[in-house]
Image (cartoon, rainbow, N blue to C red; front, side, top):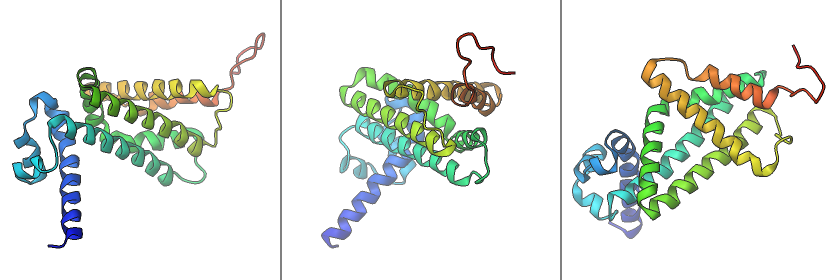
Length: 208
């Protein structure tokens, strides 16, 4: 086997292990998941794990990064699938619907990410970087999808806006998973009120 082929094989092994681990960590957490759980989910042996990773926390950090990238890719797909004549509200709905299939794993990984970030400095760094990346991607995606420059928001407030929207949708997804209540329309209404409804000026009555 050539060095190049061996490198590609190792990279493929790492990619599959990371992808398979997200579901395992979502279901069992880092503490509850075993190395055997991770390699069985990926279809490998323990040797494949130990030749590429030194700890479960290292795999979790990689899985968190990869899943964040998957969320961003899903948001972009939501834009691409929306019709050219879509209203801003329709575009937001398409973005949220594209994330929904990932909702269960997202909320569970997010909860585990917070826990591990409070316990492990390296995980904390990855968690914060992933969170910031997702927030920036959400703002960029909303601007692209709705043709809304968000110029009325100070630049230093945009991360807070993104965090608020992500937290609101995460909360809505949790409610949907627990009760079956639709998670999309409530947030579409929230985004509509924040981004697309012109606030009345002082002394001006709200628009009907």
